Amino acid sequence: MKIDEIVTVGITNQRETTIVWDAITGDPLYNAIVWSDIRTDVIVDQIIAKFPDQNKNHLKPLCGLPVSPYFSALKIRWLKDNVPAIKKAIRERRCKAGTMDTWVVWNLTGGKDGGLYITDVTNASRTMLMNIETLSWDPTLCRYFEIPMQMLPEIKSSSEIYGKILIGPLSGIPISGILGNQQSALVGQNCLKKGQAKNTYRSGCFLLCNTGHTRVYSSHGLVTTVAYQLGPKSPPVYALEGSVAVAGAAIKWLRDNMKLIKDVHESEHLAQSVFSTGDVYFVPAFTGLYAPYWRKDARGIICGLTAFTTKQHIIRASLEAVCFQTRDILEAMYKDCGFPLTKLNADGKMSTNNLLMQLQADLCGTPVFRSTMPNITALGVAMVAGHAEGIDVWDLEGEEVETVPTDTFLPTTTPEERDARYKKWKMAVERSLGWATGKMSDQMTGKCKTIKQSNFKMSGVIQTASLNILHCLFDTETILYVTFF
Image 1 (cartoon, rainbow, N blue to C red):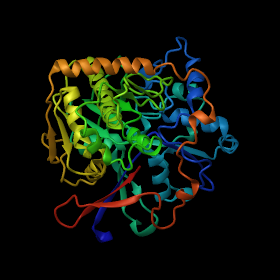
Image 2 (image 1 turned 90 degrees about the vertical axis):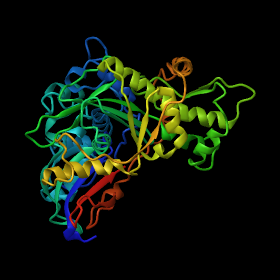
Image 3 (image 1 turned 90 degrees about the horizontal axis):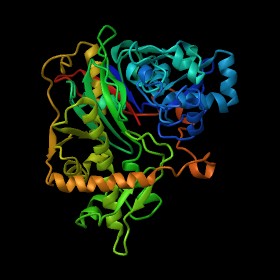
Image 4 (image 1 turned 120 degrees about the vertical axis):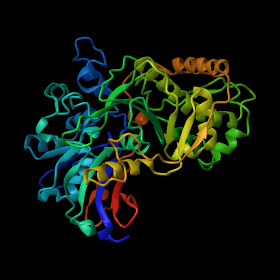
């Protein structure tokens, strides 16, 4: 692939992961805090205590989100409260904060020497600081979290020409698309019409349903988020989202902590070697439960063990846990939207597990259509980047968009059977609640997975991401996408 064949660059990133840096030196002031980190747990209680009703959903009408360690505002607040260098930088008005898209764009477009300080609406909608209606930073939200608005980037649409890359071999090529990774998967799955939904199976699990230009405020534990905005003058498209904190991470836990498997790929074969879980249920609430429960006091449990339970039963139960958590979200979406989903689009590394996909169809009673494209997230951001450049490979605002080939998994169980198993799952969830009642020690939280500062040094070629080339035109032109996980 030649550089002159690249038309534009799109960036997709892990959404809530947050970094704070010095505007003068360009250096990070602390390690990035990843989306699943729970060190902000105590701050959640401090923020909720300020609300008249002490309700974690108090700010939902403004930002669409419940107060949770998951979102970026809590991470910025923790950094502000606990890192002296950041406190000083804020006082001296030289502190910048953002999600990973902001950090990457700033560096690619000049960094401390005039780099663009921007984010897009999808990432901003995950901070708890953006007004979900006006698509701008909200003074009330910033006041609750005690975060100065001057340290936040400018909010842009998901598809417009932001500026040009000024470093390395890609110098001179424009950046014209930014999407949070889950919204990018929604676009890549062509869920561009109201009522279409996708689920991405990775370390966590993220189910988004397109609600069109209507903001649907969930009363059943889901969050309202921006799906995408195709240009600064276009109206935003919204989505309902349910997030699962632990999906594929549970399989890694079985490998790394429990030593039940040697490789994650073994899980499918071993789980398939038993007919059922033997009535074993595994709730992997290692960092609490996200949607639709939003219980930070939940912790993981395995229940229903007997003298006949084997590791195969536990491994199968871990796969079923992913499916049950997905059904929790689908049930909530049905209650909020009033109509059941007729199909579920699936993607992500974990979706390559055929047994998992079949269990998902069986336990939800919904056909599952798995994308055959390994990185559908990258396709989504390439689509919006191309849209800004007027490239007509994908007509994102038209009636029909060419779909990605899929594998289909149809339900094979009866409604009575799946409902009986789901009832037992709900019993297991109830038993997982209320374990983390006090302040958690370092031994409980452990050291979070952070991104070392040395990884952020930018010199010529991007060192923090793998660059992938996507042939999105039929001739020689190419859109470059950058995926950050």
